[in-house]
Image: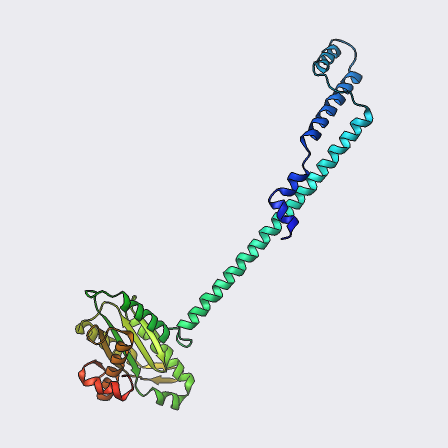
Length: 296
């Protein structure tokens, strides 16, 4: 918006060009004088003329010639033209400002939308649309930081698909990707609405369970996850059966930081995979797995 338009918006231009009080007084006198002359010339002599004459004489004023009246009317006409032009320019400036505001708002919404999309991509897995490792670490760290000593516990389930490499090697990565997407959807549908399912990468997933620290419901959930994920998957003409291994770590028994809980759950998962038992809780017996897998 130019300086001239800004002046219109703040009323400065209209204020400086508006007819002055002296001009208005002069025009009023001219109009009264012209009105009196027209009345005197057009009305016939009689009581009505006498009444108009009395009216005109009751408000004496300067006498103006016809040329002076014409000049005053021309001035009024020019002033009205200027005012009309200024008002039209003001309307155009206002419309331009409105259009610029709409465009600015659209640009801002576009930028905000881009920021939201960029953050979503940064915190989610592209293949499965699940939250990713970064998302898990942020959420778990924030949850642990807010945790009070008497707060309910939480649990981390570390899940890995057995023999998934053989699926990729035998049927190709396209089939492997479909297996991962099906597994993600099944895990998401098996946990509660407030729980979080994360894909860490490859065939590794994590379930973050809020306010669950008792072994009984955890065993029930792990059995459910084993059944759900192990259900045969129909992919084209193939029917595949993929079985997971699950490791469980509980806060605060097994750790009070995100790294500790993930490391313990990962070690328990390797123990379950080694023993072929489906799932296992972290214990002192899993400590060698922490060292062997470079988790401590």
